[in-house]
Length: 353
Ligand SMILES: *Cc1c(COP(=O)(O)O)cnc(C)c1O
Image (cartoon, rainbow, N blue to C red; front, side, top):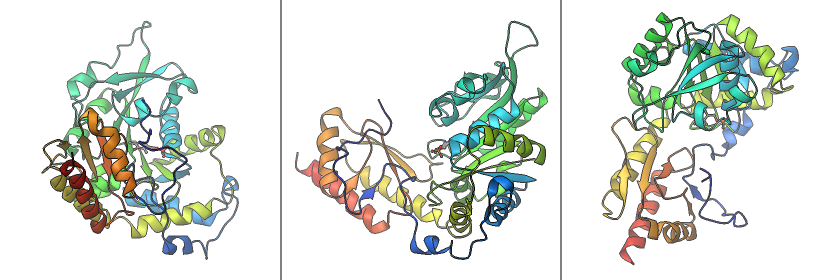
C-alpha cells in the first residue's frame, strides 16, 4: 500500500490542520520567507549564485568536509552520491529497510546500472558488521563488484549508535569500499545525541542532508563530501536534470533553516515524547517509542478502528497517516498545545466506543 495513503479524500482540504504525516509538510515562516530579500542571485549552472555558494560552503564547514552541492531533493542527492562512488556493474550494500533501498524507485539501478544488495537490519535499523562483510563479493567474474556501503541516520526517527556506524564504516573501508550516509534527519541525531555534526559524519565519505524535513525549508538537500567526489557529482547532477539557475531563492531558505531551526528540534523531540506517553494510557493502542527515538511516534491501532478513528481525528482538524503502525511525526508546525488537543481527541474516541 502507498505509504502516503490518507484516511481522507483529497478533495477535502483543512484550513490549518495539525498534520502528523511527515516533517516534510512544514510551511516556511514569515521570517524565513523574508530571508530572500537581500539575496545575491546569479545563474548557479554558471556557478554565479552567491547565495548557493555560501550555503554550500556553510554546510561543508558544519560537517568538516571539503565541499558540498545543493540539490532539489534528498533522493537526487543520494542517487548522485551512489553514482559518484560506483560504475555500471558495481554493487552497493544497503540496509533492507533504508530509504535508499525502498523509497527511491531504485534509481541507482534503473539509471546507473548499479545493483543493490540489501543487508538485513534489526527493527531499529542497526546492521551487523558480520552481515555486511559477508555480502562483500570476492574478486570473481561471477559477481558484481561491491563498491559502496550506504547507511542511514536517523532511521525511522531512531538515532543509530555512533560506535556501530563507525565500526561499519571502518570495516567497509578496510575492504576498499566507500561509505555514504543518508543523513536526511542528521540534525535530529545531532540534537538528540549531543554529538557534534563532525563526530556524526567523520567516518563517512559522503553525507546527504535534507533541509526540507525537520529544519523546515520548503525545498532542498545537500551532498557533502571531498572535493573530487563533489566535482563528479556536479556533472552527474547536470545529467539528472538537477542543475538549477537562480536557485539562491531556495538556498536562502535553506541557510535560514540551518542558522535558525536546528536547536529548536529539541521541541519536536519533547513533543513526541509527550505524545507517546499520552497515548500509551490507551489500552487499545500499541505505542512504539524507543529510547533513541527523536521526533516520531509509531501507533498500532486495531484494524476495526483505523478508518473511524482517522475520520474522528480529521473532523477535529488532525491528519495522520494510516493507523496500521501509523507514524505520527512532530515538527515545527505542531505545538505543545496541539499535542494536548491530539491526545484528548484520541481519548475521546476510545471513551465513546
Ligand atoms: C525524506 C528522505 C530522503 C529524501 O527524500 P526527498 O523527498 O527526495 O527529499 C532520504 N532519506 C530519508 C531517510 C528520508 O526520510
